[in-house]
Length: 243
Image (cartoon, rainbow, N blue to C red; front, side, top):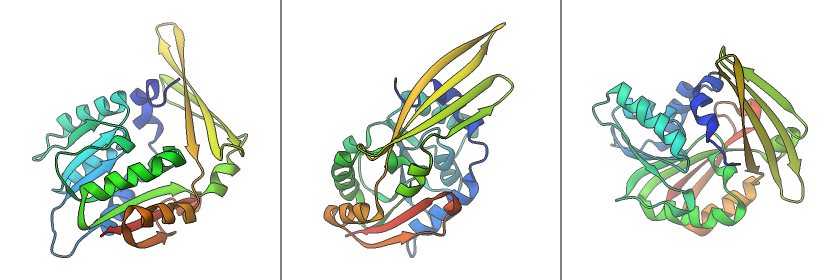
């Protein structure tokens, strides 16, 4: 079962509680560069483009990258509806295979994108970010603290709309150092309901491991931040400068 396939059509409906405006403002504060009113930015693991479109609406030039064609299809549809002066460019790529047409002035990865990367993919992902971010540019990303992911072991959550029900069940594997969670999506199909399933894996990267990976990839001025949106839910942020 792949992640963000069937869920893509309902992702925005099931994430209505995410403070996207606050996240966009916070990330922009981390990415700002002196003398740069408008920037070319990369949104890595952009999903349905909620943050991509907010920053593009502020006049920045955005590139959104995601592995899920279904999520990107939603992002492109939303971008067409928004009719922005400078619409984002969306690319279907895995993070460790990032390949841009040129450099960007900053990059960000929001809402657990780095947790979805297994430890063996971190070095290549950061190497490619180092390659495609201009010298002096900023990389910012968030991740869930390992202790938060462990607390979700055995948890079950449900969310619903008039036409869909989403059930989420988590199990933390200490041997893998990862949270495995199964998602059931039930949607109306006439008088019946259709059931589809996905399996997601989020890896428990420690702040120390991430800092070390950033340093080895060539980033400096690395700062761990604990005051960003949803910090009370275990969300931490890193800001690093490309040298």
